[in-house]
Image (tube, rainbow, N blue to C red; front, side):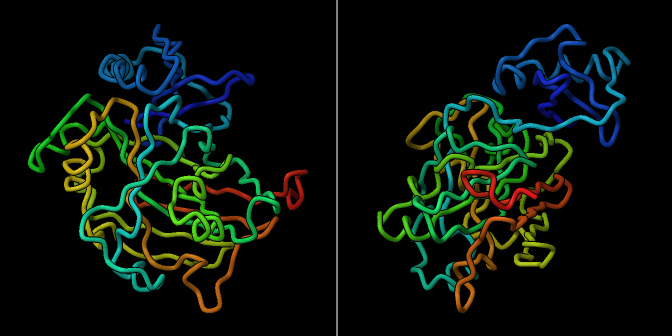
Length: 287
């Protein structure tokens, strides 16, 4: 099943669909979810109602918004693909390198990324597999880690490389407004299988930039969830971004950064594709 945020008549509502079938709003199933955690809690009921043919299927095209609404935490992992470590000249971390992306950075799967020149001159992209937590957990074992996953989505860990270097840490440079597009929906874990066997790619203006597999992660999803839950409780609706493969703009020689008018597409096998245009603060490049 897929869980998405659809805009119908301008008002957003969570909706579900099976494979490529029509979207069915939760409201039409008698369910009302103010955020992703609530939608996750209703997922079993929604799936049963959908299977029984209940609800009102949307026939017109819908605009998809960010399916992650009011998460408690967005946790991200840096330097988690060996070839990406090599291209950046960084040292391989001895344990997962964790930082936060703040919820105010969330962005829709097809909404613009805003480049403010007084904030950064080195805007970069990072295609990532996003893991959405489905069950409250603390100190989960590697063997049981996948049991707490609700589903997966595609993310772009947009980054201001100049601020990343100046600050000496990642959170601020990766948490500017619009710097966390996620979507196009959340695919439930039972539809995905092994999260370490998915192709992951990005393009800029139609040119392939990243082309790898989640199997190349230094620390896989189960290791990351076990590590993170050692020191914090993971809650339904929390998101873990699992790192990016090689091919980012910062790693090119010379580096190539994004400019207004550029279009970045990120894709993970079986999970869909997100596409975001870079625009200036006054809409420059949005044409």
